[in-house]
Image (cartoon, rainbow, N blue to C red; front, side, top):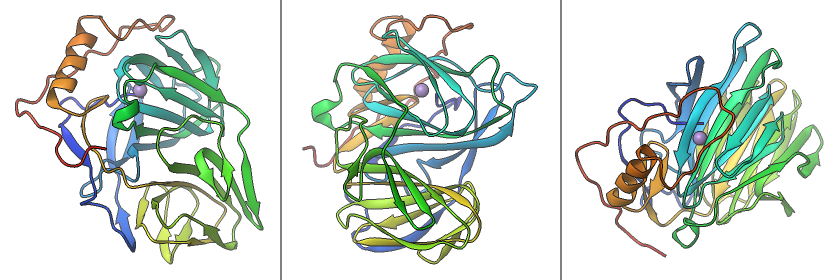
Length: 321
Ligand code: MN
């Protein structure tokens, strides 16, 4: 998925200063954004005052949308650097194509994991004869400096491990939850998990006190540590917890995102994560000149042009591991 803002700001993210070392309950409101011609998303990260949760640096929630008589998602070829993208569906089908030759249809609760590393381009669209509803999330994970130039890769994991408790099914999307690990490749300690909770369930989910966490509601209503969450909102929880109390007010679907606080400062602009304005400017220029990123074959339409760079340069500062 692409950031389609016409004038995307350059964002300086990461570092310890925003991280809460102790448990907090900080409710984040979504901002509506348009992706492709027909899909409206609720953007939860980056958010005002909250830019990352562990290495998670971008979170869009979309749908459920009735696309029976529409083409559905159509995101033309666009580039990425320095990050991984996670495509996660609760309904619908998304066809992924990229510049390293991958072509894969992602279905609900299957992991589509693209590691951009030094450079990749991809396109995403609803399949031609698609299911009626489209509902999902698009998530980005920032790569640590030591790995941000890795060889681009795409993984499709259709069968993910599941952790169950009474009334709760947790699918481990990425990283590790309760000693159960996703097969998806990671480059920093983190977790992404999909939680299905039956109405009336009251559970305490074991979590890692060294991680910071946030929970996003995709459907239903749940109390997370006593705070009611409805679809499209996210609760930032800070670090320092060993368990997370969850109470489902109706049948609910949640995403749990967490990770070791990302201590490096990153520069994020459009679809690129770098460490300096120069990194970003170079990636933009190489996308526009058709070098570095390769070609996405099979998409019926033109690649996305990059927006104009903002005039004010920004440098990533702070601790670099
Ligand atoms: Mn994308």
